[in-house]
Image (cartoon, rainbow, N blue to C red; front, side, top):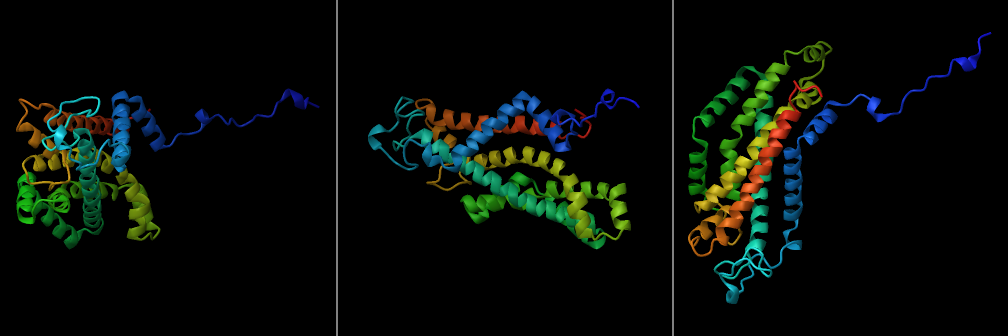
Length: 299
């Protein structure tokens, strides 16, 4: 009889490297290999953590005026100097970044609800419903978005809520078009046709098969759209048609500082620099997400 010891029992390896990686796991690895995208993500996470509770990082109150220290340059006491009322510029920048993120994230969340919702209904329903939604899309797309937003702000008035409304009304169109186009292409795939053949309901197909395959292009679209929303808020506030005082906005601070930039350069420089770094970080992250979620990438 053969010696059993000569045939050692094979053990299944528990090495995590041997386990098959998920699509999202591979995408995360590709993203983390992109150094600029990783640095941008770390910067944005840090900014988000700081602006959730800016009072913990602020050195003074948001509107605390110290008239005796007006027009001070950067120093150990006032890192970014003070403005005409003696308010700490560093503190106001923290709250200005908070304003930018509130507008950007709230607007983007509403755009996702409206754009993905209408695009999903149009792509799944077809027929008259699809025709009606796409004609509405055509009408909204015919208006210049920036001019339409300025017109809405002139009608509604300045303020945080109004600027979100003015950015949402014309902004959902591109996301609706992307969602509908993706659903129309996915409807022709074999796994969706198989789900139809076994009697699956449209709602089940949408939740289980279509939405998971829509996540990647939607994430990429959001990563490119969000910095544009932040820039739009800053631009409107710079023109005096955005955020109302006393709530600080980076665009508003740049506009106020620009009036005396020859003498008090710090008032415009630091808000503009922070805004530029935020947009640059978003651009790096967006490029990294686009490359990481590219279906042609295999490793």
